[in-house]
Length: 221
Length: 284
Image (tube, each protein chain N blue to C red):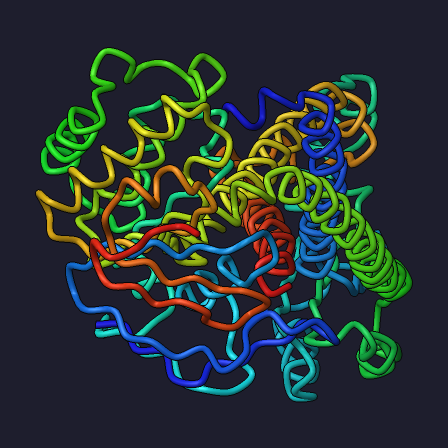
């Protein structure tokens, strides 16, 4: 479970988050919506412990001793993919397991399974420069799921993609959620996806929670 | 290796500076060990030669008395009587390549002597005072100046070499630190991604530490090879310069010990530079 209680975060004079409070149950798929600068990414960065809140409490049930171990429990998908350009698909996907020191046989099996999930089995030897935007994001998703994380944070994963590809990426995330029961928080301002997703929506405006709509109840005004 | 191949000029600069550094370190070490061996050689030779007149043959009791007097001072390491016959044998050995010199000399022409090694070269004058008034003494020679001069020279080599190598090590450290720092900065985004997906600092840092280590090891091996070649190439000159001092050729085992030491030191300097460069970035 993720519990945010009166989270405040400022960058100098700029208020990024103000009194943000909500809870997310294990296994939920939540859209975090809002315009650019509304605080979506800041919240995800707080969850990833890249930033610390100025005040308030942000808790997860991920119990680890160190920051790297904590992050190993989280899968992360970025808008700009953040793949390693000098490594091929296989190597990029394998990275979270390589840093955990997973041995060869287990590693190979996990990479094949993850790449198969995102339907890129035939492109495992290719490098990022040889892939389309949608394929790059699929690689990033495979990398995010390979270590079977408890939580996946997707920060505008469809922001750089065309509408058709965006829908396929969302479907893929939904499929992963349904199969693995992983908690997913997807920051997006793609109204079309949010409207058709029929999922819980938490909307932020100027750092404040303005809507927290339960699964299937959301309708964009 | 991929990373090293990608920036060949930076790699060459790093290896070059490590080679120069390790060359100086190896060269100074070999010279220091060589000069120490030369010093030992002179110290182990008789430093005080007490020559009897060439027409005088000392009695055994006189020899025993003189030796006892010298040993009794407590300042003597070894003392040995050299008879006229033994003196001729030594003369023959030294001049075996010159038959003319051998023909002209007989044992009667050469003086008997007592050879003395002092525990401390500074006591040679004192020891000469003990026996200078004995019957039949013609001349007393001692090599105090040679040993003292060599000691001074050896110490100077150590100090100057140490300072010089120290400065060069610092330069090598800074150059590798900068080169690996550039590489780290060039891979900033990649490192950030690795940190976000949970890579430990040791995982991120290890390729950069290895890179520095290999620069150091490569430089050390090249430097050692150059030093060895220089020694082998100049062996003829060095042997004629050093005369009978038996320090050349350097033992192969010693040279491999120098190689091992160089590799360890070079690898340590390179690895530490890499660690500091990436550590600085990870801290920030």
